[in-house]
Amino acid sequence: MKRPVVGIIGNSYLMNDQYPTHAGGTMNSDAVANVSGCLPMLIPSDPRFVSVDELLETCDGFVLTGGRPNVHPEEYGEAATTAHGEFDRARDAITLPLVRACVERGQPFLGICRGFQEVNVALGGTLYPEIRDLPGRMNHRMPPDGTLEEKFALRHVVTLREDGVFHRLFGAREVMTNTLHGQGINTPGAGIEIDGTARDGTPEAMYVRDAPGFTLSVQWHPEWDAANDPVSRPLFQAFGDAVREWAGCGGGGLRRTG
Image (tube, rainbow, N blue to C red; front, side, top):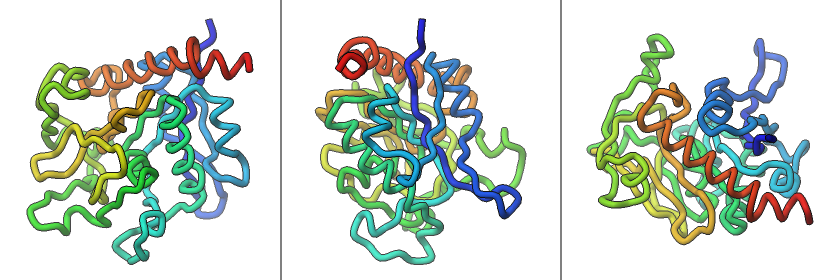
């Protein structure tokens, strides 16, 4: 039986400081293949190579991955400053219209870290350039030193809305997550439902209210140890179920026969 295809948004890098590449973390592919049960396909997120329409027709669902560059603040009406960090305008040009199209079509996506922020910006929301500079906020950034296991270790509690989507999915009001981000949501976009927050008030889990498809997005990195983590596993399983439903019933079935 053919597995449905999940497009994994790639990031641009320079290999050996000179060779341009598009790359994606192996742990994203691992989570999609072995927990969601789908076929992972890395997307070169650059409009020179792919179009949003082509991606919608080729893939059944999408993982909007994390990445070092941030969404350019011009996308939410602000001027760039040094606090905003690095940017990837090519990725912005793909992911922001892709999110809007998926919301409208009901095509499933899972937003992770930068992807979480992309969903908010795509729907008209804004971001803080640096969470740790805000009064009363903790430092959510990745620890600068240590092993990969130490950098992705569980570091803070996320409190979920009583009987909300994430509470029902995880079976708990509080879950432990890792944290590897500098920016965060300032104002939510249209239809954005904040369903979980860190103890300092930072939004950590959300979905698009009244959207016809799967739109769950998280500020942490659930792809780390997704097969074993009690929070990551049900999230990727639910995403895989939504992708299979799209591929076999509504959007995907219609797409392939139309």
